[in-house]
Length: 251
Image (cartoon, rainbow, N blue to C red; front, side, top):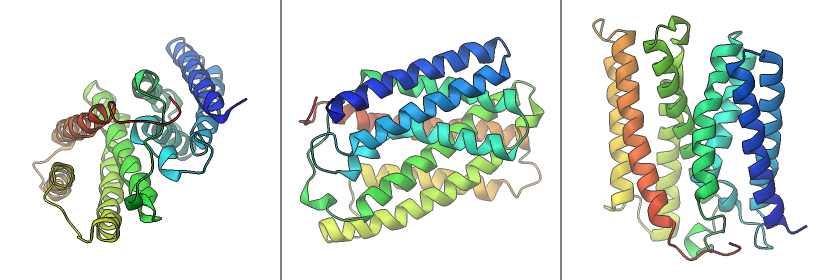
């Protein structure tokens, strides 16, 4: 079976497993929720690895393409959280945003954008790893902010996701600057993409500073987290939708 078929098939199997996990979650069958969730993560992992050899040669950037990598990162962070905190039902509610982003991935072109000379450096995939992981942290921060606002005070750990997301996003900016220098002979370009990244970083930097004010309570943090992720969502998917019409290999 061609790896392209394996990748797409496993993506659908992952979506199906997460859907069963969601059904079990709504029925409060925690054991089945967990089994289906781990099954979905396994299928999604196989799908992502298969994308790396989608066109017959290994292209790491294909593995870390945001539309497909973001839901994987969300599932990975959810599993990590599961082993840190004993709040199973609250934690597995994250299957809802995972499914939403996976449905977008199913509608998105499955082919690979042909690699260019600018991406022939390890800093290119590293940038996307850190950036998408940061986006996943911001997404889970927003999701658990919603849970907190809906009277789930045990979801206050959303604040930690914002902080870790900011750290990862800061690392992404440094790695991105190195990649920019190697690929375009400049540490920063006054392009729309770079300015969007800078605005996201500044928004979350404001959160990091405001959290030290006594008047900036958890409820305000939750609303701020939601507003910040709305900015991330708008900028990132604006870029993804523009890339839908780019020439692709393999489908």
